[in-house]
Length: 342
Image 1 (cartoon, rainbow, N blue to C red):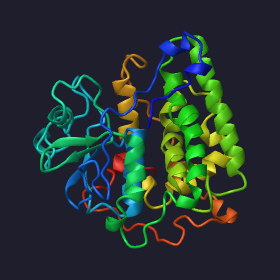
Image 2 (image 1 turned 120 degrees about the horizontal axis):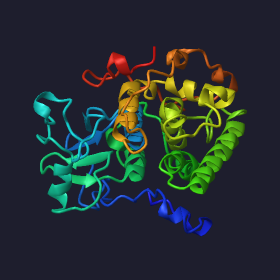
Image 3 (image 1 turned 90 degrees about the vertical axis):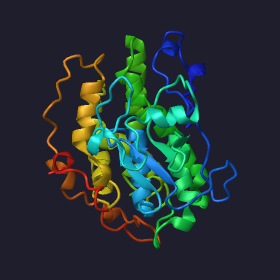
């Protein structure tokens, strides 16, 4: 994903505020290997945090497409230290496949003295231990379009060619005002910047609510890349963005349409089974000490509503199109009980 670029709409004070950097390592893993990285089963490892909405896109896409056996998975600790994402959840504090303690080691293997931030999702070349890409936008699109030979039988089309222009258009607005908008509000250092981000966020959410009032999914009648991108912010909204980031005009659960929509997706195999509310809350409330200096993690919100009936099937639609639902979550990838909705 390219950096947020709305300078022509911002005041000078706003341009000093939170801006998301673009990916520094944007090589692509493709069927023809044109960047030097051909699609190959077992060669690459996806490094992700279940706390991170950008990484969650890749987790969901990988599950829906059935790429678990082709692209192995490393889950980081939701709590970062001064070296960023770490593998302290694994025995010995090292990833068992890559043999590293910190994701930054794969970054350093790619570029000595790399000065930028260490972000997830990241895809690492297992034989060399070198980072291939941290381009969170391209990773999911390429999983859908370049990894087709390794996808499971019955994998859905998440980026169908006939809908790509509409998906891109809808997703761009979601990225600017929702995915990144909550961060612009949460990390704002000026009142006017916060208010602008807050206003744009809820204007966009209201538009999406109206759009979804008569259709089950954002584009067409099946789940697409656009739904994945919206879901990863909505599923975190009441748990962290409403309070921690001050996005508090209303809770998501107070919008009947969006609350039903996100529950529909959550209950769809491949979505909710990748969500870890424990990781999400501990990461945001303990890592962002400039916003929450006490590091206290709230007990709420009540998670029991996530599994209640949503009735969105009454709008029609076919979640997987002509495909099928993904199978059970592989052994070793099940979200721990403390992170699941009741």
